[in-house]
Image (cartoon, rainbow, N blue to C red; front, side, top):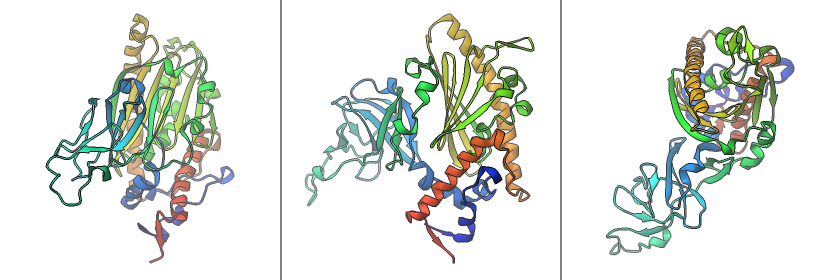
Length: 374
């Protein structure tokens, strides 16, 4: 794909902490950049698709979509997890349409049937077709890996193994153990902004005193810190038991907020986890998906906590949605030029935006994107 050099390369220079600037508005507003992101960002990085509890038995199937590519994840007869393009090799029908269990993957269009290893087993009435051999057809595979009970896939071979990418998180959050948590419920929001606007907002606590008055009472903003690793940033704050006579149902200990490139957040608190995926719909529309996990899910105390979390999280999300949509209007206005970043509070933003820049630079370097001056 060709992109005008003047419209891309000037935006991709790494921003240094001593003189840090935000991304150009075009990277949030321009349809050409948005179209490139599926190839450059989402097909080349790990994406969370589900939990191991959804694939505990042979034949269990999980359907999803990444960067407009339908995917099906299965547990095969050798107890292995496999992930395939959910696109029949005949005329592109789906081999699975919903989560469930089946001994095979059968196309819903013409009945071509594949094994749980993606090999074509049968194709109705194709026996009389010249030079047709079922052994020549199989579903393309994608990379798959598991971490702490969560299943990730990558359409193309990712830059690093999943365990290396997430290295340090498991030890850092102890005594919290994510593998002991059970799924509770899902919340979804549609936001009128580019997906990266929401990502930027998550990546800093700078806005908390101004946008989230109730949340600001539950965490210690003065000691709100950010650290960056190769592929994720880590924000954390000690939780206060009581502040201004507000009972802190967040619990005792530390609030851990991980942002994993390119579009996953892990919000980890004592006894629970929110996974937060940011899914582009259009250049100015985004779906935000929260999945909630808890320890001791059936206990009365946990059920009370779930009710509190639902109410409070909705308040925080409404506040975030409002400011993100206003920011998008500002980016669309033509008035904005990249502003200086506050390194003390926006280190995570700088780190993340440099990974976006690097993704495009790497695509140009490998000629995945062809740059033309004409």
